[in-house]
Image (tube, rainbow, N blue to C red; front, side):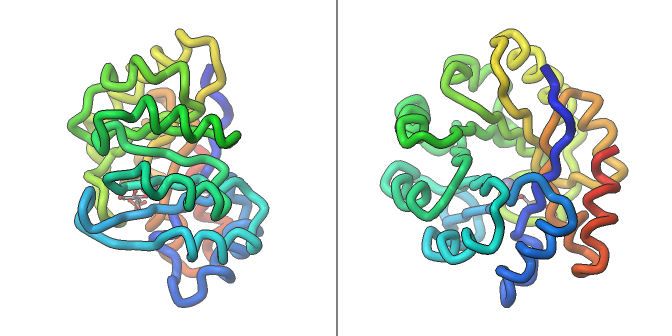
Length: 219
Ligand code: DX5
Ligand code: ZN
């Protein structure tokens, strides 16, 4: 069942020189999750942050840390990201031939597990890990950078995954990441998503705009 819309600001678009303050500001502005984009310069063509940064950020906000790992291989760093304070760890289905095992490891650590699909990956790719996941993340841009345009073809994939999630009878977040704006959000929600990641659309105006920008995405 589609849950109420939740907003997960991607701190990729925050001011990296003062991330703690930025976290407190989006928390006060009413965000639901803190979306942390981890990039390795290998699985995706950009580098962001690792476990030491995450553990320093954790005390600044009590909301769930939704950690999106765009790294390969992922298994060697999993424990470090879990120990650093992740509440949800999402891995890419394309990053390893053994995503099932990786998801088992995340679950056995007692936190929520997510699986993500790049734009070219069909919904069916995650059919046989559905029983292990608490979140499915649809990439609606090619991962690596903020500020890109929403890929319209993502909408049919979101709808397909909505059906697959509902068929499980379990509570599984359906999250969409990339090019989410007040213009695209209504169609994304209509297609069946219930967690919206947004970097540019939340952080574009500086702290004074965060509350209005988050509210504008809820539809
Ligand atoms: C892209 C990241 C996204 C990105 C979204 O690889 O996973 O979270 O920061 O940025 P916007 O909202 O600017 O498209
Ligand atoms: Zn992300």
